[in-house]
Length: 81
Image (cartoon, rainbow, N blue to C red):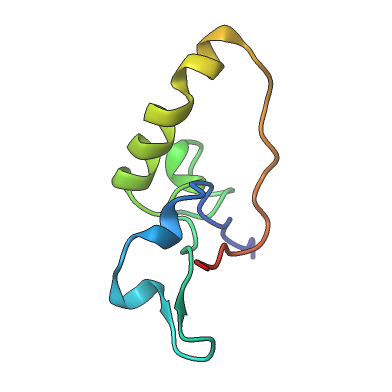
C-alpha cells in the first residue's frame, strides 16, 4: 500500500480549517494529498485540494514555462509559525 504525499503547496498550512489544526502542537499544518500516487497520475497526487493546486500553479507557472528549474519535493508536513 502506497502512502499519500504531503501537499506540495507551502501555503497549505496558512489556511484555517479544522482538519489542518494539530491539537498536540496547537498549530495549523499542511494536509496529505487527495489521492495516492499509484492510483492516480494527475496533480491531485501532489495537492490536497483544487485551491492548493491552483494557488501553487499561480505562484509557479511562469517558472515552469521558463524552465527555471525544479523545486524539491516536500516530504514533511509544514507547520505554521
